[in-house]
Image (cartoon, rainbow, N blue to C red; front, top):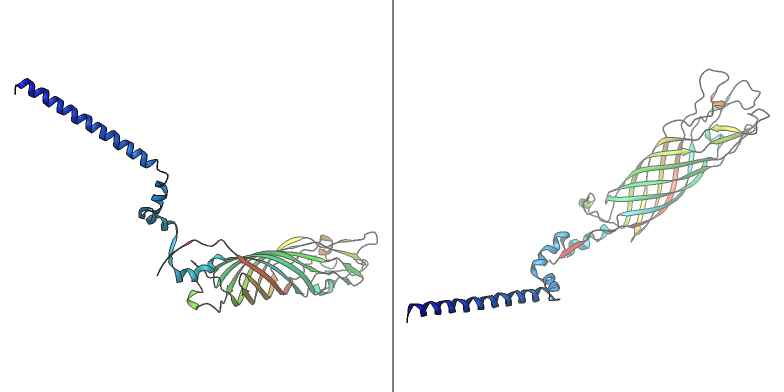
Length: 305
């Protein structure tokens, strides 16, 4: 075979091979595009083992028995409605002239000016931090009826407490080693004794006086002025939970840290240069309430044992 013919054969073979490879590449592109356009591909990938490896990353992997133990974590927030009564104490509620014509003052107690029993209610929100520890935020109103004293009449006393409290619980139905489980606190049903401490602020309404202590041309005047006073409180009780509902009873004591303020008229002592300052009152509370517990909870990925 001549050299010229050999060159032509080689060129022909190379061109044929290039044409076939181009068709194969074009066909492979068409095949890949068709695969990507396949509607069942996404569901196939979702069911694939690769996708399954990443699914538990966003969840807490636990066993079935552990899941059963932790399902109570979904009920960690409570809303309570509270009602009850208080007994006011305090021997010194200030001193004033019983009659406008008097030249000396006479002492009085809180029980002289108001009914000892006061009635009220509150609303409270609580957060279960661990089975043995919860935080409580609440506010309410307490009313003591004013009464006559030494030919004078006093208007009713309204106090509006709001507080932040910590409650230490004894979940008797739970093993002791789980009482301080802060990461996954269980919601425990049954009988739960508790003790509670509160840091409280109380707003006093003003209290007016009318009668013999005022000059004839005045019908009424402020005795206590309105104001905000800090208090400390503490007590204990028992809660009983059935499902997400609980009832409780509580006995507590609150102690006001500063004296309520008298109006300038009654703070002036005609027999002394010193200002008249009342003593601090305290209150025994007997109250009960109803609580509903709820919460969004966590998502668990259950791993068979």
